[in-house]
Image 1: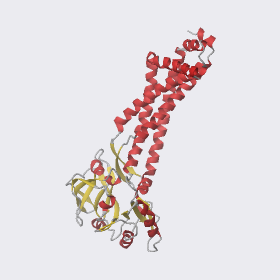
Image 2: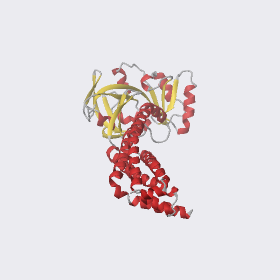
Image 3: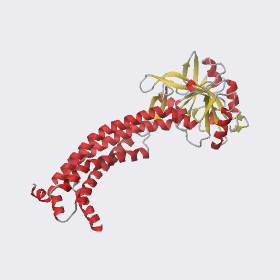
Image 4: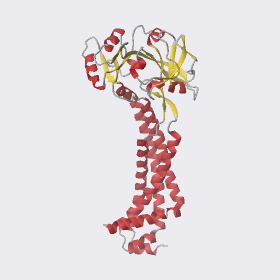
Length: 396
């Protein structure tokens, strides 16, 4: 066993040391694999960033209540009396000012994208007096919060960055009314940062909603209180509602787009990987052909076939990992944190987000590179091991 390992190590080290002598073919293979990795990471970082923008961090103590049968806030509807019953349900956290529950409206308004000047559907949310406290991670970055009863809005930092007309102290026209931007807020990097917030009581008459709402956001006494809260509402004959953890609701809202992006990314990378695989095959076949007599001499000296196969695979893997690392680094510096916005097909509203090149994504891409390298070296390695020694020694 020790002798076999020694043979593998010796032949592998010899192969790797001679890579600079074949730098043209080696660079071609490495660049091809780097391109695959960079494209794969770049496309999948869109899905990772979108998923992060729709995620809610922290404990699972936030719940959303919708009308039974609704698949989003857009299709939901709740009366004022129903929102009161929800706020008074067991499991809802309370303060001296009342229960931590916010009855909310969700409408879509039209603004222009800063980057392209094209129309965009932007979510405008009417929140209750406890809206910011319910979420717990709302921080004012500029200006102040809107005052109840006034035509004022505060905008998420993502929305302010992506859409025109949302700078501090600007006025936007919504319906027949003008609304002043009085603040810019951060929401922990979540979906709220792509929204515009105002007082629900002011938004209702502006959109002729009477006393109706679309959802209730509630902060629970603890994550374990969710089931008690849900059971109390679903068992109440006065209510016909569905109760979800907010993080589960947002994950479901983002599932269609993230699945689509991931599928497209893998398909594009697979097509590019096919080209990189042929480049790797060509490189390794050339490497084996250039060292036919060397390999035959080693086998004549007693080196087995398996060390030869493993040494060629190792050389191909080294080239692939170099290319993969270069592609991953390129993708990280080019894409990580890149700001963009896209439409969420399940709500037809724009979501501002940043591309996210995560460690998990980089590891996944490196595995792709390693797989290409191993496949690219497999057949040349088998050919090198099977070539008759006498024939190989006669080749020039």
